Image (cartoon, rainbow, N blue to C red; front, side, top):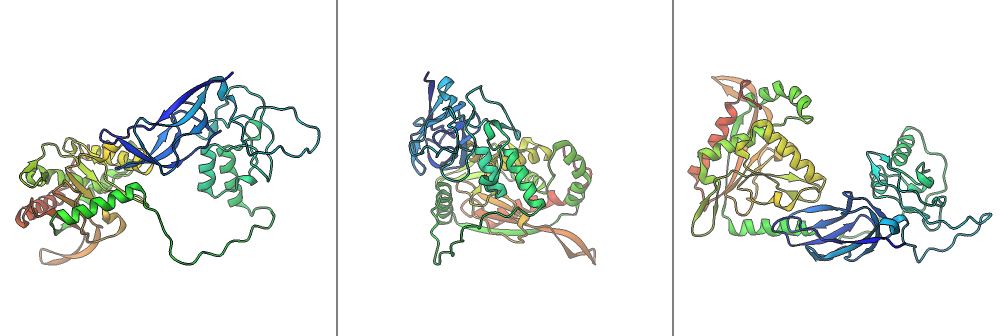
Length: 431
């Protein structure tokens, strides 16, 4: 009996996002898809995100190919659920295997079971799957979780023996094989295929939609905003002492590390309250001073830069800011951010010092009056009441829109940030 079909549509990944470009399908026709597990990756004007399957079933047809831009709400795939989803669609190109002995009775192949926490959940009863074959056409399909694990651990799936239903390979099989290979030399195998010589010449890398948008925004920023720049050196002794005193208890309670970034964010928030004109937007004829402080935080990934926004950041404690940043950064790296979480920022803080930089001239996010950058904290000799002492010092760098702020206003803002940081002590509350 044919099962029901579900038409998968392009989701709207943000209030102002009306289309997306399919960058990669994580499954192919005939694969089993599991509700809430990633099905494809989509690029929008603001974010690259994984789109989960809306139902559990068999992917029967892909209606929108990789590289295709699709309007939100348009159909992109067909998934079969119910009785008809018990077996994948037949592969037209597959040829019947040569007989190795008595012919086995025909049986419908069964899709791989979904994986939950590294263990498999048994699928509905069905005819047993045929044994795996080595070489030739692939006799079964691997689940997305198995494929990703094999890619991460650099495991050749043809060498892995499956312990799952019908001899299928599970994620744990891949992990166990990788662990055994690392612990002892692999047994002799057939001679590997010769490695092709590297192709000489330049490499052409196609830009993703997000990368193109970053290029457009940065170009617009430099072409339309008259950038100016200032820096001040900050004695971070109090901040270092506060973090050292609280980091163990914080790690135990929150489950992640307390960094210096929330302290600098809090300093920026305090200075923005004191100098509200910095928390504003210039629109050629008037200055819009924003009531809420929506703080953007730069998150650098391997192939892109995202600036998720902590909304109403001035209502949060140091711990609250740390939680918000940890959540946004974790989901940014996992491609789980929503496009709306990248919009609405009124000021940005950048932590380029985590990579060891000492001075940065950051480009202003269009629509904002400035961006504050914290640099590496370095022990340096400084004069202390006529004597030389070693203190943890850090440069705060401020790029600002000279249409909104003059040098005097910018210096006052930067001074307020520095004074807040230098006033931190062991009594400064984290919660």
